[in-house]
Image (spheres, rainbow over the protein chains, first blue to last red):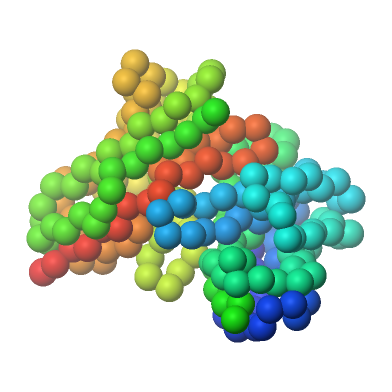
Length: 115
Length: 110
């Protein structure tokens, strides 16, 4: 089954404790992206990657890092989480060539609480 | 800059009622437009899309038409079911991201 997976699905942590949220897709998509969802704001892009070793900032990158060492994986790293990073996080992917290159497919989400 | 504006919710309807969720956008050019749905406790699923003016996207009884003249992409369904209760997001595709509206929560009661 074609899908985007994220782990963990739920995480409660404390301020300053480094964490990583993993994202993996099995569709051989070149493009991957991270969004955060906050009430009243919809989803906002954090970082995106056009391909392996190619990453760029989205609209709200402060406090986050990413890496893209393999095509299928795109982890989101919070080196020193703060309470304002409490949010619902989504990973997404899409193809970059051929048909339907503008449709993004989303993972199930990771609900993060930073105390 | 580009933006998407959705009607505020929640929208509360009885089963079999007609649904409209308004969505307007501001963008240069002609971006693709999308409706995504988020069922309780789940991630986002693509509901429908339209890629050019006057295109109609449809899926599961939902429809939306890309209206360039009014910069709108309103979501409609003729007869909602309890199982349609969810949050609906309108979005446009721009460069390397999706730009989302704030979302509209729909609650359908028996």
